[in-house]
Amino acid sequence: MENNNLEQIEAKMKLIRHNPALVGEYMNLVKERREIASKDITRRIRTDLITSGEKSILDAMQEVGKWGADLRLTDAVIYLQNARDSIADFIDGVDRRYSLNDKLSDIRQVIGDNHPHEAMIGLIENILNSHG
View 1 (cartoon, rainbow, N blue to C red):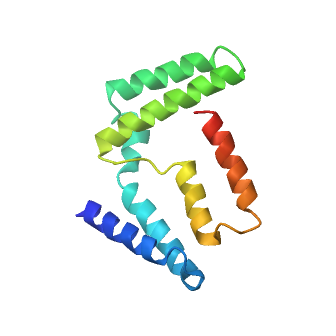
View 2 (cartoon, rainbow, N blue to C red; view 1 turned 30 degrees about the vertical axis):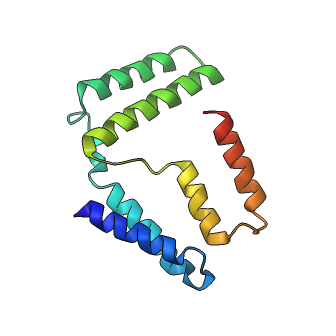
């Protein structure tokens, strides 16, 4: 049922995304899509409900955190967090996470390709893409 609602919302978003008069409605659909996709997200922050795999990743993150401050270690913690999120998404039945790239895409759809801030969005995307 929720997947059907999510598909309907995404279909509406595609229809109105380039219409400047419907920016408010579009942003409401973005919010609604995010709320549906994040149902039961609280399970993943409750230590009594996480799986042994999620716990192992959390323990690894804490261990790496003890090694000091270094960008490579920060990258490792970020990769471990992404792995934990992917496992939690699988357990929670979430098809995919709403990433920063998705958020940038939503912004681009609202402001259009020729907006003055487009260059900044492109720069952020290049940085994200160069880091995997």
